[in-house]
Image (cartoon, rainbow, N blue to C red; front, side, top):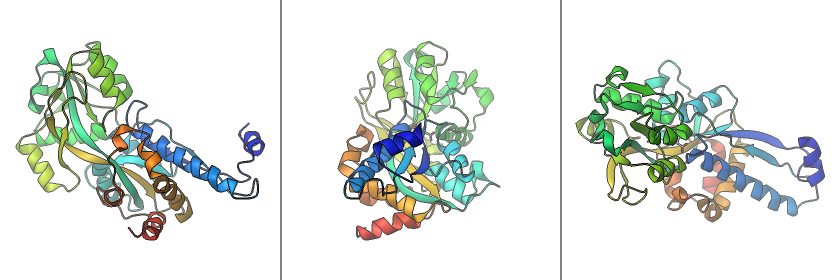
Length: 319
Ligand code: GLU
């Protein structure tokens, strides 16, 4: 069917397929991956208009929902995905073989660009009276699905506060898309999410029941920020979500787009060019992209070396 539809539309004789790993359907990674694919298909169509019908090589890009950062990196290592969105902390650990990636260093990981900021957030039911991170003790908490960035970062934060899984009365492993309903149904009292704003999953919880954002600070967090370049202080502005009128301080990471040294220069160049040639359209696809800045995107939160295909485009633009 696919082959027939390609030849019927005359878009391509030889299409190249690739996959961008994202996150849950109600997060921002899913929007990011799909925005990149959209820009790529848009530029493929305009390129095709300038050529003889059916001669251009078109790219077919898909950005399915996945388990998140570490799942995506794993799929890139396995050669199943060509690209993925991942938190800057997990990009760092994968390329350096540290933390969860100890003994599994992937030196062929390559950076493409960074995207929006992702504050580490605790959302709790108001009646649970959670005032800070330590206040999660004895509560029913969703610590995140294995493979997600929030789950792995939660484990780092727990360690820095000297907390164990057994300190919670329940440590649930629900996916991002399942958390809002669980917290509003009372199955969990708090949920952890490292995600850009505004995320549909958080909006869903904030508008359906009485949840509030809990600040994440203190000496253990100061130390994490001091010791690790990929962490920074972050704030969730007041009024971003229903029921949270005041700004909340936490710490955060950046969302980044990554690939492998095995992916060709041409493919990486093509997606980078499609994104930045159509950057004002790209930024309109999600409010989290509104304040993105090209110069920061090619530098911030990137621990892995830039892929040569990305460097080629950034040089062309004089960046
Ligand atoms: N930061 C989350 C992760 O690494 C995903 C957030 C999102 O889907 O936007 O798994």
